[in-house]
Length: 335
Ligand code: A2P
Image 1 (cartoon, rainbow, N blue to C red):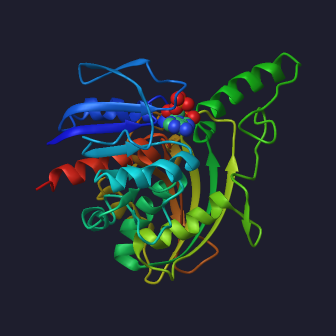
Image 2: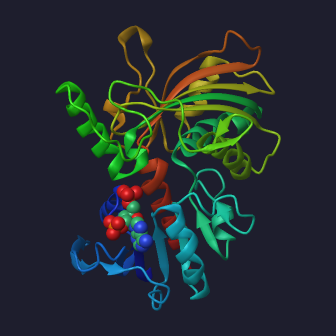
Image 3: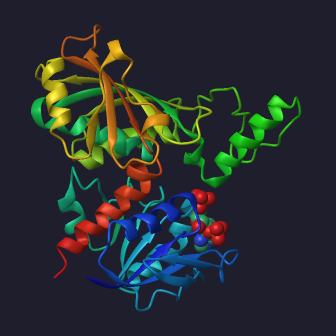
């Protein structure tokens, strides 16, 4: 049982779901504190029967907090989380800023729980597009060692925060009305479009979102030899990221074996019956905590290759659910 748990970014798209999950999963906390920017300070929120006034995040607000779960923009996490660690707080961070820092644990509890349990600083939760892919890779890697992954993502606008969904709705309405719309979260119209750029140009023609999938995958599995070739695309879907994943393994894995391995993995649900039109879609996975897999088939272009389709709620397992699962892991091992 934690005495005081704080949620930073409690007003955001992910923060709101973190509050819901802490309540519905009966997280073992006596008290909650909710923090956000000065814009939201003073607003009330309810969690686990307690009505709590949102406080402004400052460098000296951390006293008395045992565990902090943060979901904020990267620059906020960069500026404030070291002060929390200095104040002796256990920190779980959803932002992208700390993930690749060698001092920081990057954790998906189904894959590398020990990294969270051994951490003394910040524990980071991976990028949403990485989390669903690595969970899908996990049973294949354990059984046959994954050598190479080619992944194309179809990412929802909610991945760009609340503003992303405002842009989708208002931009679509404006397009239908024949008017114009000034997009805030995207550099091109997202209505009736697909944008093959998420993040900024990083290296070798890849974007920052794509390179996160490369580096975070290797860090989570502790295996720098895994090769990943990603293409990340934003599509006009409000919530749930979809991914077309091609995996090449060292040992052969049949389609039947792969289906069985996926079915046995906690956190994965297989929905796979092409003849009846049964496969995961954003519309059917929205609001679920699992990673959904379908269209499992042999990669016809590669000897030890498998192809499949993977959908997950990017605000849940891709963000809030993974962070809360890390918190639950810490709670289970609390001394
Ligand atoms: P606020 O609502 O007060 O701006 P989203 O990703 O959905 O946009 O949410 C981002 C979250 O991070 C929000 O809760 C937002 O609070 C919070 N946030 C943004 N900037 C800061 C900041 N400088 N200090 C504290 N919280 C911040």
